[in-house]
Picture 1: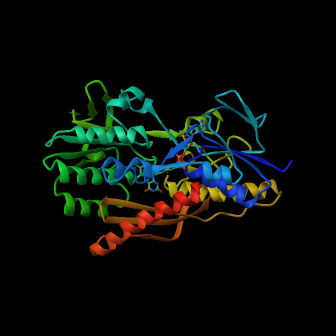
Picture 2: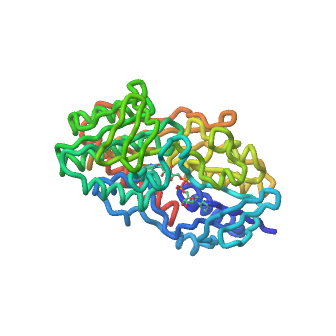
Picture 3: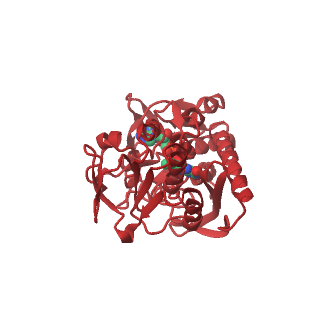
Length: 393
Ligand code: FAD
């Protein structure tokens, strides 16, 4: 046969990988499976929550990938049979593969946060998968009276996009300052430190005064349980009943990775970082948020880079050649107000079983003129246009 690769998950990692596979080898049969006909992107979804952007700007179909010769299947994968090398979709169809790529993103570890589940998320949205949850949090903010409190519960790492909760706190503060200036943002955090902390804290002081209050791990900020019916958030030191509660629960690899047998005790998927092949299941590769990446943050930028590197490795393996050692680049922008952004760029290479950061990274200076912040905000928008065009056509 000419080779057949099935890719599960049509988000940033999966779509980038599927597209790169087809581009590298036009004769390869590439099947991309995702139940969502429309993919809603998380990057810039914090702007939607703050009322600065429409959700439609976040939405992408796989139509252009289909036009390029990829086979798109709008189904959820429910079963994986590594022995038979086949996946089963919800409608009962079996699809065989030579190599399987999983990029299912995250699922929530509800057991790790007593009281939180699907039902509680309708009262206390996570908005950590973009779409209906994003719009729900937006509506709750709109409905809140001036003088109210918005609480955010932030989990420990590893989690999807570690700086994004703080970007969200900033943009919620922007909305409140503009529309409901007597209101507050209370951050209850399971961590003491977070990425680009000095940049965020400087911006908060400068833009929002004392509107944002953060209680870190050492001050008892870790949320230990919630009650959706009363909208209560419980920490070691107290109970909070905010007007709006954005609860971001602890996370793990998307469920289908566990079905494949590719998840270890950490809740994530150990891989060989040169090929992204699972350490636990042969011929199954895991990319994006679901894999144990080590030093590489769980971001769209990383998922896309991993998708392309994984495609190159699979093409080599199918051709009987040794895959090259990848060097991945990731960049992460944070917007704290319209026209005010900063960035963090890193390079990563395999080291043992994970990725380690190597030289060449860059972080925005803490003391910089506002022109640089404005330029980085514009660059962020450009980054989003580029990565989404690169991924979805
Ligand atoms: P996803 O992009 O989530 O794609 C997973 C896909 O798999 C989904 O479409 C899902 O439907 C599908 N799927 C799951 N299970 C199955 C199944 N059983 N069968 C078939 N399909 C399935 N990253 C950045 O780089 N920059 C940013 O500025 C940024 N901002 C963010 C802001 C927020 C608020 C959040 C929450 C995240 C942000 N991220 C950002 C992170 C980024 O969204 C993720 O890291 C990225 O989407 C990971 O890509 P992925 O392919 O692993 O998963």
